Length: 274
Ligand SMILES: [Zn+2]
Ligand SMILES: [Zn+2]
Ligand SMILES: [Zn+2]
Image 1 (cartoon, rainbow, N blue to C red):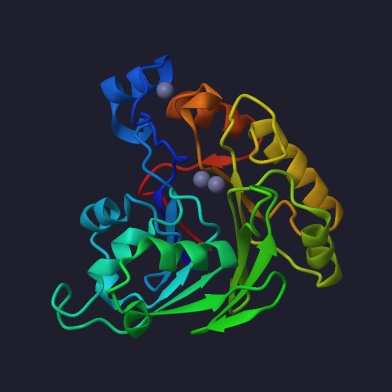
Image 2 (cartoon, rainbow, N blue to C red):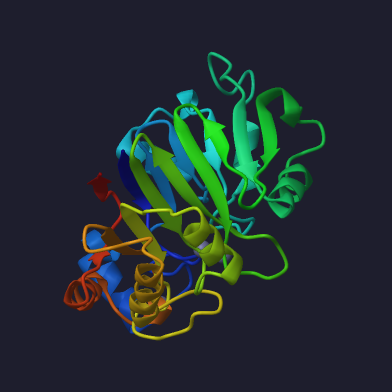
């Protein structure tokens, strides 16, 4: 299974839209891996995770076939993960030939926003099927098994992270979240889940948080908790992802600190294969 990080930033991106802090100034000056667009990932070439406002730019930069993608997992309704108004563009007359229906697997709040934000004259159901991704209920998508797990994030909705398996390999795509809630840990333990690639939220980088997002030391603690229930071990690939300028580190510093504790640091365009 191949995981490509199309975007690796938090809601405001790096440099942040309206910011002039030191991290953002450095990012603007040095460019390269310091530039982080809003988070999105692509599994192989057919399973998309999240739909931020930068989706169009990701499509231009990485040249993937968005017309042909029919399966979209959505973690939660925040605009950096679900920029619903763009979906209007997948309609007859604007997309040729008319694309196949896209299935969007998401929580109830994302579904609500989907219908609220799109113009009422747009026949959304003709082009999209919204499927409720119930926590802990496996979904078969093509030859993947996807289990939506509960995140520890915005408490006003059922935020999700995704356990994605294909053949004998499993990825846990885990942002946005603080320390995983008990129900998620229980699910992993009771089902003897083994994770080959663990991708964690590291929004706060140098700072610890754990209740809504995580920092690098929280990631290390999260790994320890998962080791304890044997969900990960020394053969697991550990990745820190989803960064904010508020974490205080540019790419180089982040990568250096993460390497010390055995984590890889994502950058826009990074690909990992398991
Ligand atoms: Zn986010
Ligand atoms: Zn900034
Ligand atoms: Zn969020």
